[in-house]
Length: 141
Image (cartoon, rainbow, N blue to C red; front, side, top):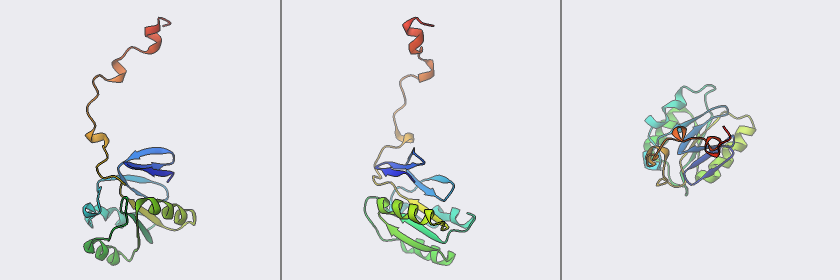
């Protein structure tokens, strides 16, 4: 993880909007935007990841929040240790554990759940590929 911003994260210096599930070698865009959106169903991916994660670092957004009891119970059944922090500190902890070679997964919620997401942005007035290129307009092509 390279960093975070109000509406998402930077992973390998690529801006990824929204919440993410991230492991040592891959990431997935993740639908939850608030801790109340995090459910056992939203974390089912943890059951199929290989190697099985030993630690889940859960970033709860701009401020640390309590883990919902059904999620806590689900993670206990999986035998997974959980670290719950605000998303800024969770990003840092994920990086440290990942650098140590631990089997860690980050489930990181956006800092600003109201931030505009690509699916919520207004449609472009005209597609970029239909515009004449700058070179064509300048008469050099």
